[in-house]
Image (cartoon, rainbow, N blue to C red; front, side, top):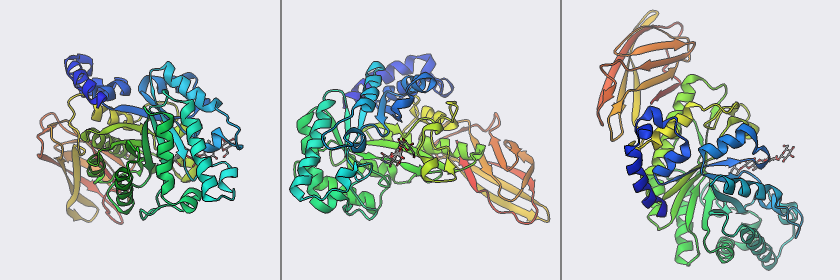
Length: 446
Ligand code: G3I
């Protein structure tokens, strides 16, 4: 709430500030400033051991919240019962304080990255409950007043929305969730307490289960402040119901946050895929902006060199907004443009529809319709696609079309760049084909 009020003032100021007024200059502004002006935080997961040099500089300059990628997990902080190791976590919290950043504490109770003495122990319900609440109390107390949001319980649900039979779920049933939150609240009454999960980003069985769980917890008076949506997404698959999903949780009276956003693709990254990723990052950012109780958005690593994706999904990667050399990717511009003052929140602003109008031996005429699905005029557009079967563009009208290998980029001409909300423009081209003429594998508009 505080953030949204500051945001109103900041937005007014930003509207008067020439450097932030247009999309082009907004893209150059630090993401954290753009986010702050829109009343949300923009965070990143970080690896504590890398917080030097250019990695640290970018993390500090662009983000106003950090989440330890691994350093606050139970296995990291209490590998041996009763023996705590805070070095890694302290380093990140110190870094955040030195750079005016918030901290998302991640995570207190999770079935993964547990120390083996917890995971493989033999537990009576009472003994496990005590061990769990002691752990929560110890960790939250240590960072009292220094961690703004805690992922108190992480990934409590199965894919079908039922309670995961982790050591906690199997031994204690759903009551462990309530007990973890109560212990966290007692240890730091000011910290915002979240439950966090993946594959709950759109409306579906798992998010329905989360919705029901949060409703039950609230009805029992459990001190839960927010719901985190991890958003480990796949290129081109931002759930169309994401905004509606965030909103239904917010309507329960809790905050929501995007907590671990990344958008993976099959490697290698191409210009067309990166353009699609830009639109996807923008769409997620807009979904958060459209829901007043969305507190912020965190990316799960800001550079491709610090992403978990290649290790867990062989052959996939390029999932973050900066490349491995810390150069900004189109995805970073997608976030910046969605955050730019005056960009309306809500669904992404444009779609492209590709059709073959006529086809003959070796040649065809294609047409693409660009539709403005946003609520403000488009002031320029670009459509990118990828041909899977060697098709080559020969000549185009109503757009400038360039092709490099399989990747095609079409940009507006001076007379058709402006498209009113709800409006559309069409361009066409002649091209060649051989063997077969399948539609583009990737098609994006931005
Ligand atoms: O630290 C050891 C290192 O000493 C060793 O040489 C190396 C060899 O594999 O492993 C290192 O540990 C790895 C650790 O990350 C730190 O890099 C673990 O193997 C690896 O499993 C661990 O992966 C983490 C993963 O959680 C574990 O599930 C990722 O970094 C971390 O980004 C990821 O984060 C999770 C969130 O906490 C919850 N949501 C899903 C998200 C992605 O899986």
